[in-house]
Image (cartoon, rainbow, N blue to C red):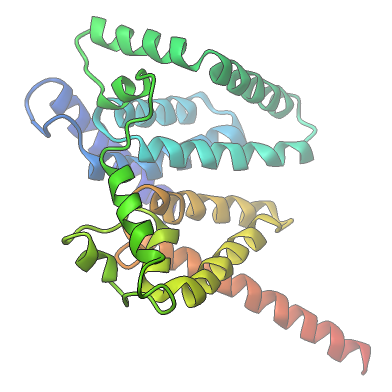
Length: 277
């Protein structure tokens, strides 16, 4: 089902991207929703490429990623990067030559990107501009300082209220909208602390973090791939955008986390019962 949805989104997103780049459709400087829609096929086809090493899957992943870069925001790139890093970590378990090669290539490329990040971003940005394509995302990545799009002011305002008069119990669900004049805080942890206070909000944030951490400990490869996909889709975006109250992917991820705990508890109960039979 997810593969079919990824394919349909990829086709529609690619066609829309060509219309936008061709000047037939206008979305302004960039479109955050479009880039997050394209995140699903970018992740799914990256996974298929890493799993089966088929060129068509790699090409589709590259096309989706390029469209995100040209038309979207930085958030989806962060999500894709986190997914790939978590995904590549499992290649220690594989002895296939091409997977080992990909693993080594990935980490070497990551080191090179880290060392020469500014130069690489400027080269890619100028390359796109030379061919008539402007990318807000690449332009922001070429800047010497990180442009927060106003989030720095939002975070400062949120921190002031988190440790203000109502620090213990918070401002209630959706309280950040009232404080910030209708805007959400663009960060899961700050939003939870504002909504529920330092005490209960801190416990909720810790509980969710531990739930997600348990997902990464699974030894089942298929389940691991599914979990990190939903982490990239449902949790990483909440670090820079959206709200846990309206992001359905977050609640799906939370459901998967609770299901895993339930499965582990049932398995433990069966072992205990079997021991005393």
